[in-house]
Length: 112
Image (cartoon, rainbow, N blue to C red):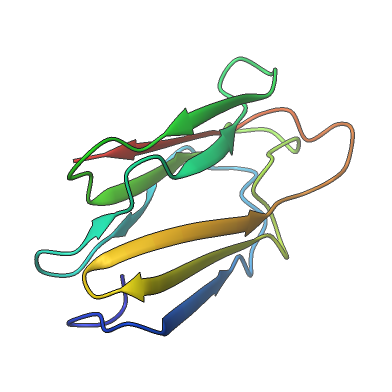
């Protein structure tokens, strides 16, 4: 994440400050050190222009977003991802993405 080591009750909120239109480079959130995402964490994705969800499996350490080069990305200006550490070394997530009916592109996935 953005800390060198997590401790219980750590909170990080990422707010997307720029529109993701015009690029396809991945945005990667990587856990620090030996930290991981809580197994079974879920995030919404729009890889095929339909809502789908990716669930984390054991020992996954990164969350990756790949935007589409269009103005219809799910993750755009003002979108938020909440990273919360209830247990030392294990991060849970929450999110608040675009709610526009046209926000149908962009893919999120957990990875190792």
